[in-house]
Amino acid sequence: MDVIDGVEYDECGIAVFIDKYLDVESCSDSTATHAWCSEIREIAERRIAAGEPVKKGREILQMENHAK
Image (cartoon, rainbow, N blue to C red; front, top):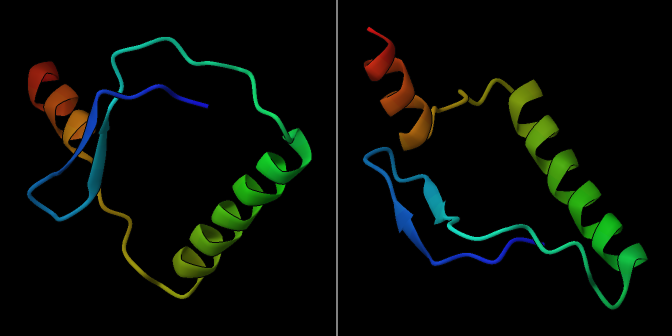
């Protein structure tokens, strides 16, 4: 589980989590958390397999710009 400072949307409309804290590896129901994460992964895999384009988040675009 992440502790975040907030959520923004980048120029492509993608949700960006402002993660400024350490990850917290505790939850009251790890089985439910695993199932939830698996469901999100399956949704993403179906959307990619259907040809939906993968958009780069703000952080990746910034890293690429700094590398130039």
